[in-house]
Image (tube, rainbow, N blue to C red; front, top):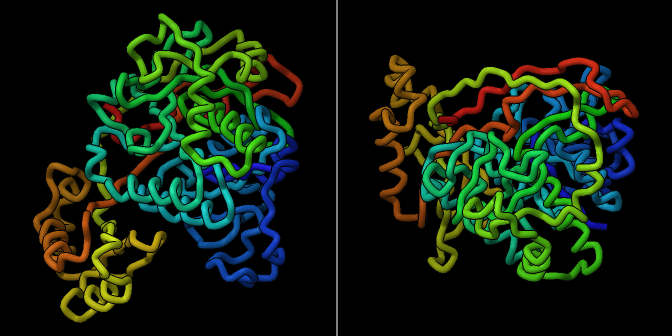
Length: 431
């Protein structure tokens, strides 16, 4: 069976559409409060919560996905690839937001535990992808060292990603997926890009598992829903040939894209995944009533609490070298250094240090990329000056790639809309 990592807001572990497909960590003993397999996570029976470095927490009110987005995404994979194993890795909070560097920890965990397909339905919009070369390095390592394929939602701002990039969708090595409407053209909310988006898949009014029930399903629209359709097909390729290299898998995927005049110039392929692979999703009737929510936008946000650096592996510099120098007395503004990959360091900054206290007076400056506070620039320059890192960049806030449409909650066998279950998400960095 192919393991598909759902890097998202968590997963309703008790949902009937999900539970038969859950990945099981055979090296962990359930609920004993011990990291039995020594992988750094406690009781990670079915996946990881990066917020707690432990397995997903389940309660009566929260079955493992307090936000709901990840469950809907995972349910699509379960429906189209019923033999795939779902590995949830939570990096988005209850509002559907997170920080980009947590994706590194999510990917590292997924790769180390055998995931061959990594679905990413989140992103930050409007920041140059070149500022996040650590993402490119992580994808490269995942493909070359673990034979995994990375898939991302293209985003829901209606942007041309060639002009206004979306990360991680625009990261080299990532397969970027746009969403089609019921009519087969690009959905009005979907991002596109002749150079940066690879293909399209259905993404409008998609029926899948609802996180707040053990049996109900709901309809959502977005490139978040299109990406797992592609992930499901990739999982089926790996199921037939488990030892395949990513290059072979991607070639097989691209051979199943059907060109369309409606999508010409919208992506590299100019088409969408063939209908034969999406029929189970498209065969479900659309709701009779739907209305769009008012869209809201905000400027791109940056997370001044973390730096991410990539060490040139041929330089001879070790993790010990970096840790010893940065954690010494001369760098009191550095709180901690963690290595999700051998040559990728996530550096947490101490916001209580004198350098950052002075900046707290200007909250606007702390939240906007173009107005980076002087103290933050100084910290970045001081670390760069050591010469340890091939690239050193700021972390960024990300949010789920769900369209601003309302979602309808459906009974497990009912295909008519019953109730609205959520409001539109405000996407950080939308324009």
